[in-house]
Image (tube, rainbow, N blue to C red; front, side, top):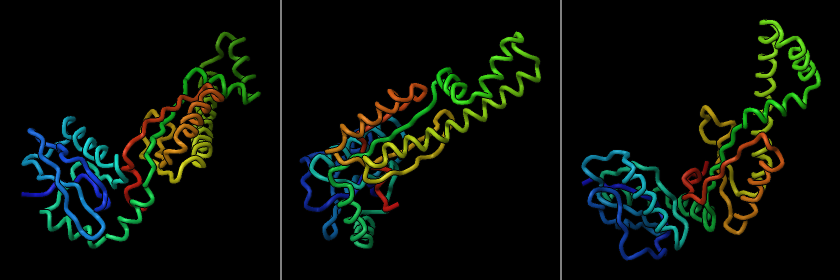
Length: 239
């Protein structure tokens, strides 16, 4: 039977006596060891699908294991031919895995996404640009302006908002990066002006979260959302 892999930890790390993995019923988690490392594994289900039940089970295994030390979490769906193949990979990348475990010790991932409050950012860009504000006031005085007036004004506003998005994305990273050990950019998606993951030392967690809150307090047009602490999926490799 193929082997499902949840994560990698130090071989000296203490684990709970029993950990339930993915599957229905849950498959028991065991370890594969090589040198100073161990992989947390279980048998792989016959049909492996990204069901909510199994996604949460995968995450629970990682969270339970990292209570006593750092874990390199694998993404959901990592399957190896058998335990021997897992051990071979541990041996081949032994020193690199140990290096990453040392880098993750005592640290968690926080994902930060941000977008604009639509009405507030319009007010912000108008307040920052006297010419744009004057055009807006002229259109209002003319009963909204002509179709061409509205079209030109809309294009100018769109450019100003786009520039503000770039500036605010840079502001968020510049504000939070000094409070983190590492930063990774996530995939861009519609609706977010930035998507960043930060590796934060647990001793700086409150300082980091306070900085996230202050971004909105100081810039009311910004809506900033921090999710964490999370297993450090974005930092499992060396980048």
